Image 1 (tube, rainbow, N blue to C red):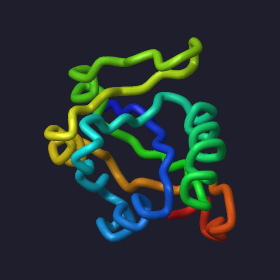
Image 2 (cartoon, rainbow, N blue to C red; image 1 turned 90 degrees about the vertical axis):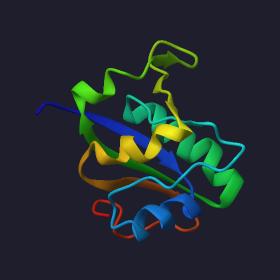
Image 3 (cartoon, rainbow, N blue to C red; image 1 turned 45 degrees about the horizontal axis):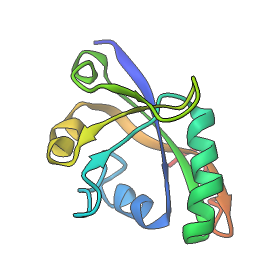
Length: 123
């Protein structure tokens, strides 16, 4: 099976829920979050974690995970700005199925803000 590397910028509340899943799943979306959007490059994830999550919640994290490439083809890649600002748009109602196509675990690869994790290289 071929996999695709995805990144997800997140704040401390969502990260705690990922940890509670054993680092294997993203939590259900809130009613005001109809889309789950992992991003296609680390630089974009860093910008969101650092520039949006830190001001909003005091900390921002960049996570990385692998997912089944064939399964991911069903989701459109959206350009949310410049050429490298690319996201997958996964409808909230499909997130449980999306989680079943994660290969391995979700890892924290970068952290920003007051609550920086000393174990950022391994989640």
